Image (cartoon, rainbow, N blue to C red; front, side, top):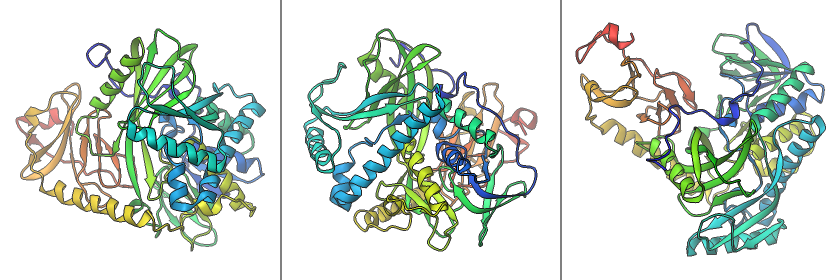
Amino acid sequence: MANEKKLPESPEPLWRVDVDIPSFSPLEEDLEVDVAIVGGGITGLTSAYVLVNEGLKVAVLEADQLLNGTTGHTTAKVTAQHDLIYDEFITNFGKSTARLYYEANTDAIKFVQQTVEEHQIDCDFSQQDAIIYSTTDEYKQKLEKEAQAYQKIGIDGGLVDSIPFKIDIKNALVMKNQAQFHPVKYLAHLVKIIKEKGGLIYEHTVAVNIETGEKPTVLTRENKRVKAGFVLACSHFPFYEGTGLYSARMKATRSYIVAAKTKESFPGGMYISADKPTRSLRSTINNGEEYVLVVGGSHQTGERNDTLEEYNALGTFGEQIFDVKDIQYRWSTQDLQTLDKIPYIGELTTGEPNILVATGFRKWGMTNGTAAALLFRDIILKRNNRYRDIYSPARFNPHPSLKNFFVNNAKVVKHLIQGKMEIPEKNVGDIPNGEGAVISIDGHRKGAYKDENGKLYVVDTTCTHVGCEVHWNNGEKSWDCPCHGSRFSYTGEVLEGPAEKPLQQYDYTMLDNLTSEDSGY
């Protein structure tokens, strides 16, 4: 496929195409509300929805546009089958914790279904079986152990020996009665309900800090203040870490999606490979046409030199299974994984009970994000919630969390040192239009990008979070940091945290025979 089916020039998620998403003005005055929610994805908007239903005054602050972050770039599986996870959870934490994790995500599926049915939301919600398959003897055995874990904690499913694709598998594990939907259509409807019930929503409003206290206050980049009884940090990576050390307790990974039109119909179900590289398959309907979503290529952010290769590899995989007409959409997403693979949902730190955080969903944000909103509601209303302890950010599981903490942060040190020692081999003249690269200017490492018209943009490549060196991402035309996953546009603006400040732009008047008129400055 890589040579036969051309990829779209620019990344664009199918979910945001032809959907009426309301727009909102930036915050222009100070506010006082019951709950301030930072982040306009599934966690933030579901939280706002359940809280306005309880009669609370709620304000949602979104740094960019609603549903344009991880939620708008998801594969939108609504499932409790989160890769091979339950045998690992039983081994590390015990059967009770594994069962609670399954039940929390199952409750989230039921909540989504009930919400869709109650409001008659047209969001292509459908029940589907979720299937993990193996193609090697090693993963065949792992699936057998995972099937035993399903039995131990009472999951409806089991092993099968075939799937309806041209893939030579060893076995497969089915989890029954899962679901999929169109996330943006679903959440756009919740936005309308939030508005109708008096909820306040602000876009292009960047939260930068919190003044702690009995009533914490969110501070915005434009010096506006939002005082609240509770603050919910629902911004993928927490915009405010306090003393929680979240950047040291998580790692960021990227994965890739292509949406293909095929000549044959998709047979139903949601599929993911146990083997590496991971490959995932599901279908969706958009404007009456069926698309097959081919997903995979997961890697730690900033650790791939040519991310377009990941898209091409997915296309090749799709061609091996389907008669592909063309690839109409491509996009990527960023996910955060905690040390023990269970999200952090709850009090930011033990000393800040009115600041709540939800992060580290590890590719499974549709259910975990919904579970977070339900947990937030119960914490705020002082109700019991049996999932509070398993998700608590204050938990400490020395096996395997301690080992993962040292491994992750050893990688940070490695990247920090290697990045400073790398000597760029390219100069501006080596960069074609539409591409970027690391170059050397007066002995200093800089990042240069030329747009399609040859206009040049140069930034300092030192990440503004802890000082690691960013790498060029040619698939998204961004600068990505391999240490904690911060991402920046080619002009240096922050796309993903934990970095809060943009990359420094390099101001110059003459570079490799380019004048300031050519340079874009």
